[in-house]
Figure 1: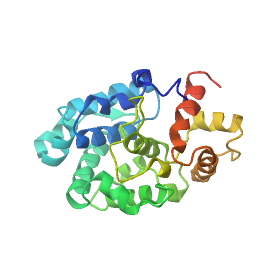
Figure 2: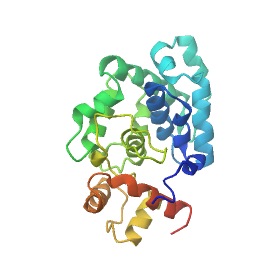
Figure 3: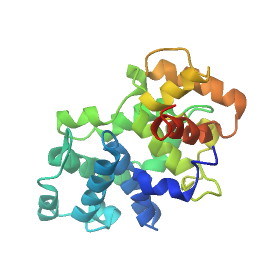
Length: 241
């Protein structure tokens, strides 16, 4: 695990984007947007996440809270796979709504957090995110565990925000939540390795598989179960385990 849980991990991971910032709100907004587009080629993800920050003048919180209609024109032309400028505009508007009406992302997740899970909180966050008038196409870019999605990207975002260690990778800036509540970001790589190691039997990478993997990892370390994400992902991506 320690082999991958190092600052060297940043060079090939989208988490390097929020590491460009110091203000808490800049970190969490840049992390949320970077995690949202984290599928496909990793180099492309990182490049496009930085392009988003450039369009927001590298002040994502200020942009979200104080943008004008003309500022929103800066977003035109952005595209990462199926996430385009319509979606980015919607995410900016919805994030402003979350900060203005729900006291921010951390407060919203904390409000709905369960003792050993944040999956219901993800469901409720999505509801509030899109409770304002919105582009219907943008809804697909936030997964819902209650609709049996593994919600890999948002679980990854939560790991970044909540978990802290001495390696300088995860931020641990959300003090109102505990690493014990986190779920491992499950995708084709972590799922393959978890099955090879006997941690997961379910064949589909869905919400039910996340619950099964949660139980296995919590049995090993109930206080910090997702620390094993580094090894599962690293073995799958870098070692072709």
